Amino acid sequence: MMITPEQKEQAIELIEMGETLDAVRYIKETLNITVEEALLLTEKLKEEIDGRSSNDEFIHMVEEARKKPDVDVGRIVGALFMSLGVIMIAVVAYLVVSNYQFSQRALAVKGKVIDYDTYQSRNDNGASTTMYTPTFQYTFKGKTYTYKSTTSTSSHDYEIDEIVDVLFDPDEPQEILIDTFWEKWFLPVLLGFMGSMFSGMGFMAYRLLGNKSPQH
Image (cartoon, rainbow, N blue to C red; front, side):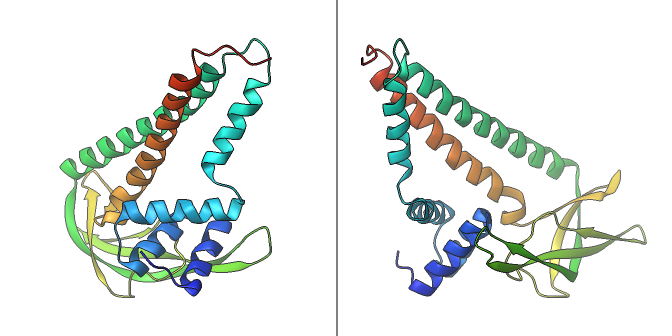
């Protein structure tokens, strides 16, 4: 997968501003690749920004821990990483079940994008990016509702007056979910990827170092 210097610079700017989700989305849509490929490419860019790979950081943590006497390095490091991974995977499970349950009881209507709120997001270097937050409008039983998205992006994902599918709770019409992949499944996919990575690193530490005596 090839990325131009301009595309790389834009993705790095989003990452440095803490907008990792937007960076993944930008890479996926710009390069026309899968979410998994976009996640991997974003992780590589983050490693480049940090100046060292996540694997180097992991090895550094292990080496520092091994300097301490009477410490089971494998168990401590493995437990830390696996705990983080399990927490992320548990959140993924909750989101998946929650979205599924909501979809089962929700009704579907057509809504439209009526407006964008904008604000400036700045990073530590003072660079700024304009962020856009869409507002949706839909009607149920003759009453019109508006919903401001909880997700902001660095580009217009929708056109004004664009029609979108809206899922809403008939008992709580203000509780809605925009029926798109990004709104429903992007966060679970991202957390699942990260949770699997942390769990794998923790298991590796446990297996490779857990039975070794500390180095003095």
